[in-house]
Length: 329
Ligand code: FO1
Image 1 (cartoon, rainbow, N blue to C red):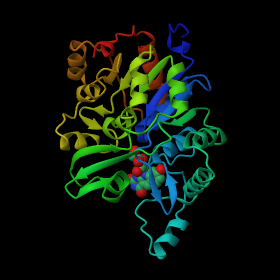
Image 2 (image 1 turned 90 degrees about the vertical axis):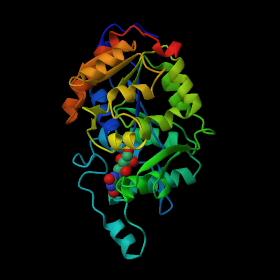
Image 3 (image 1 turned 180 degrees about the vertical axis):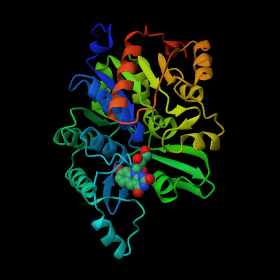
C-alpha cells in the first residue's frame, strides 16, 4: 500500500453505501478524489422485482446522483421524470405504489434484459456507471440474492413494501438479511477492498444499508482484515436522521438512537468515527472506549457540502494511525 500522509494522497478509497445519505457522500468523495479513485460498494438488500423487472434502488440512487441525473428534491429517481408507464400500469389494475418513473423504467428494462442474457449484476452495474459517466466505480456487494426482511406488527414484510408501500408505518421487532449466509461477495467488491487505502462507512442507515452488506461473511472478513484504515460517518445528528426512518427503527429494536450506538454496530471494524460537532457526549464516550473520533459538521446539504465533508473525512483518515481497536475485538 502506498504511503498516505495527507488527504490528497489517497488513490483508492472504498465507500460502503446505501440510500440517499450514501449517495450524497459518494458524490462528495467523487468530487474530492482523483477520477477513478473511488469505488462504491452498494447495498442490494433493498432490491425488489416489479412487473418482472429487477429494481436496485441503492445502486440506482448512486448512478443517478453521480451522473447528476438525480431528482435532488427527492434524493432518488430521475430529475423531471414522468410517470406515463406507471399510469398505464395502474389503469391496467397493476399495483403502482412504488413511483417508478419513465426514464427510471429504461434502466430497469436494460438491467433485467442483461440479467436474462446471463450477465452478472456486477458487470451490468460497472457498465451502467461507465455509460452514465459517473467517473466512479459502482459495484454491488454481492451478485447473489440478498434481501432485507422486517418482522413487523403486521408480520414479515419485504423492504420496499414496508418502506414505500407502508411509509415505514408498521413497528419493527426484528430484521433478517435473507440470503446473506449463502451469498458470496462480488469479485469487484473484494478486489476494491483488497486495493483500498481507506474504507469509509457512509452515513447510511446501519441496519438497512450497511449491515446487509456486512452480513455477507466474506465481505465482512475482508473489511475486518484490511490493513487500510476504516472510518465510519454517523448518519445521526442530535439523535435524528437527516432523512429516513433510522431513529424510529433503532427505538423499535430497543437500541439508543445515538451516534455512539451506530458506532457500536460496527464494533471490531473501525479505526475512526466521525460524529456531528454538536454530539459532544457521543464523541467523549467513544473516545473513552478507545476509538479515534472526529467532530465536524456532518450535514451535507448539496454537492458542495458533501465535498466539504468528504475532504474533512479524508483529512481525518490521513492522520489516523490505524488503532486496530477492531483487531482486538
Ligand atoms: N421512495 C419513496 O419514498 N417512494 C417511492 O415511491 C420510491 C420509488 C423509488 C423508485 C426507484 C428508486 O430507485 C427508489 C425509489 N424510492 C422511493 C426510494 C427507495 O425506496 C429508497 O431509496 C431506498 O430503497 C432506501 O434506501
